[in-house]
Amino acid sequence: MDHLSFAFTSDGSKTLFNREVGEHYHSRHGALQESKHVFLNTGMRYFLEKSELEKVKIIEVGFGTGLNFLVTADFCSENNIELDYTGIEAYPLKQEIIGDTGYEKYITHDLWDSFTGQYEKAQKSVVQIGKSCKLKIEPEKMLDFNSKEPFDVVYFDAFAAVHQPEMWNLESLKHISKFLKTGGVFVTYAITGDLKRTMKSLGFVIEKAPGAAGKREMLRAIKM
Ligand SMILES: C[S@@+](CC[C@H](N)C(=O)[O-])C[C@H]1O[C@@H](n2cnc3c(N)ncnc32)[C@H](O)[C@@H]1O
Image (tube, protein in one colour):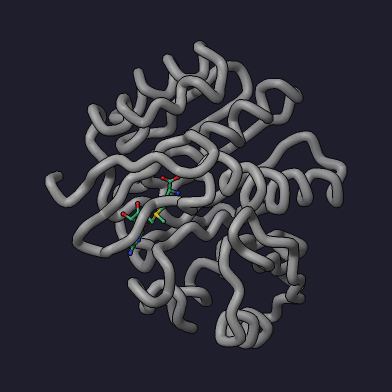
């Protein structure tokens, strides 16, 4: 994995830089703030408030270091929310890299121990993390992913369209959107005219939400 190196972001949290892709895994304005703002707050917490449910099924595109899972699972454990989380990851990171992220500072010890202890097992079967969270990491490309069960929220955390345009085209977005329930929420850190048009054509209502630090806006889309 010599194409990967750690970098610090503005809020002190670490991210990875992938030299082959030429991009960081998170915003350089703050990995932790981006994860909390875009995915936890604008995605899952919005869904829970709107649906008044106390359980949620999330699918993430691009599981990477697991930061989005960790902040989500930490919130769910603290608030007695039942979480069922699936992370799709074409190139799962080695356990040693996960251990070096420093993300244990942002969550409980029990959650960190349970996640790092079961990270490799989660790539083969569903694992229980704490009392209320289930995790499965699907080690495959997004277009190869399939599921019979629909999800409430999509965390779309692919590399940016300039580096990986195929993740943002109609075929890819249509594929991932079919796993979302009606009324389900799709969130991503970016927003472009193409993305808005594609999501509208797939039957979503588009909302421009305030962006994470360093970005004016981000996309939230609701499946109708
Ligand atoms: C922006 S990073 C995601 C960061 C991640 N959410 C985290 O918190 O560390 C994009 C991720 O997408 C993964 N990826 C690239 N191509 C993919 C594909 N076709 N299907 C699924 N994942 C892919 C990369 O390996 C990388 O982990």
